[in-house]
Length: 289
Image (cartoon, rainbow, N blue to C red; front, side, top):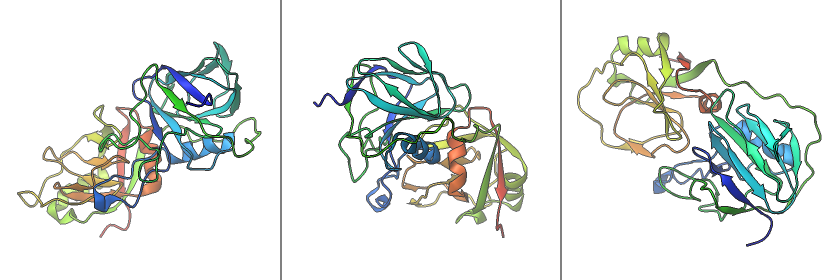
C-alpha cells in the first residue's frame, strides 16, 4: 500500500467513507447512499481543493482519530466539534496542514450529529458501481472504519481554499421538512393528513442512515391491509404499522410495502442528517391537494 494513507487510531461510534453516492441503480435494488449532509461534504472538499464528490469520512456523534503517513491538508465541517493535531487545537471549518505521523483527533460533536473530514486527494478506496460510499443497508462499499485499519488517499489535484472562515448552517433546533403529497396519501384519513401537516413530532433515537424515525401522534389509516412492495425514493415519508412517520435517508431500501404518505423535498434532508434525538420535527405541506 502506498504511504499516502492514514491509519485509524480511534474509529468512533460509526465512521464511514462517503461521497456523492451511487444514484441510478435502484432498479438493481441498490440505494443511493452517499453523505447524508451533502452540502457539508462538498464544502470540506472545496476547502482542501478536491472535486465536490471526492470521498470523505462521515463521523457519527463522537468523531474519530487518525494518523496520516504523509503530510496532508484536511478540513473538518458539518456538526461543530473540537479538532486537535497532536493535542494542540486546530480550526474547524478551515484547511489544516497535518504533518506525517501526527495524531488528528476529531472530537465529539458539540451540536448536530455528523462531522465530515476531507483530505486533499480524497479517500481512495476502491469504487463500487462508481462510488466509494459505504452503504449500511446493502453492504456495498468499504466497511465502517475500525481501529487499526489503514485507508489509502488519492493524489492532490487542486489548491485548497485559503479562507479564515466559511459560513455553515447550524444544526437545527427545530427540523422543518417541506413535503409534497405522497403516492399513497389516500390510504390515510383526512384527519391523519391534517395531523401530519399541523402537529409536532420529535426525532427518535432509533434514527440512522437508513431513515429518520419520529415520535409523536400516530397517523390513522383509511385502508386496512398492506401494499405489494413498490419503489421508494429518497425523502419518502413511509408510515409503518405503529403510525409514526419515517423519513427515508440515503441508505433507504429501494422498495417497501408500507404506504408513503408524503415526500420530503431533497434540499431539506441535509438538516435531517444533523438533527439529534429529541429535536422537534414539523412537516410543512407544500402544494398539498
